[in-house]
Length: 487
Picture (tube, rainbow, N blue to C red):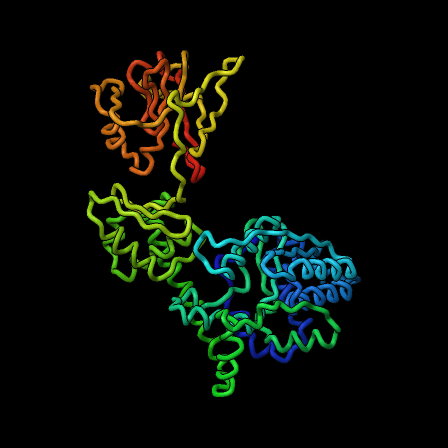
């Protein structure tokens, strides 16, 4: 949207740490919002993510004060709208009360409010907090329009906790960089205007302005890693190393610089090794040093899945997939993704449920009354469409218009077929020679006309069903269930 920097400006916020420590919170917020408008001119409206806790309620009230004070001067509040989004995770017994509190405050402040009730599960293998965060950001992403920025109330203490936790989990430069001040989120922008301010400053502002907030009862549970760090570790660090906040902030700055440089290097490698996105060339990857291999794998997975892979996963990909023999068919499962190796390439794909049992007679696919074939939804296996082959297609690359009893089936074993101008051979061999990946072969749709194999998706027309004239044929396209790929 609009003019966007290629990388988040970590250093600007972090270098302002000491300068903003004594500044008024509203001044810091107003300056940050003006910078948001300058960096992203297309941003016209603000969306506040509000939980009801101290941090987000301070951000809400401070934004409303700045907006009211700037009413005569549009340059001081260059936004056309302000609204609040609340995500009710339903985890706490008090979740409904928190939602009601946020709604009441927004009503008093005359600010538009919307709440989303979500269900948090652990199907991805993440902890409850991580899963709740994932679901929450999915809501935010869906809410944001192209001319909106999401404001979150993360502050300096949150940043320090994030860096410390990532350090304890053996994070690399990206993890040690902490949270960026801004990043792309869906169609809009995520912006953290209070990142340079300590929580104490938010508490003082809330006391001066009589801000009412709710306390999350889970904040007292020091079995949770972040709470244990906040309650036991950080006070001890402050008592022994008074300047530890500045030191950790500088570490985050250095991590951000290193991550940017490494990202640029990995990007150049990926332009060469993964021009097709979800496939990464093994030969080129193996020519790199082991450390650079891990760098490329990490950035490739992040780019394709939106998830940051951990050290162990990258190691598994490097050893089990990249180091596998040519004839091997290794597989690594990660959350709801599958990583595989085939035909000299690493593949990343969404994990799919097995194709449901197919009726013995297959799935009928007949034309409508007007003679058109409408899209055929295959249970658990995507969609088939019949379309006119591109002009100039050779006869052996397109089939004549289907006439007869059309049925979709899958491989059962023992099928044989002859491609145009080729001898009759096992279907299994044809799929192998056509470089259809093993995990696709068992779910590859087969079009039968009058009980004869006429079209193999991903391969083409079978002998006896070719188009009569060049450029006058038809073809079948398969929209796979995992991605919007067509073969």
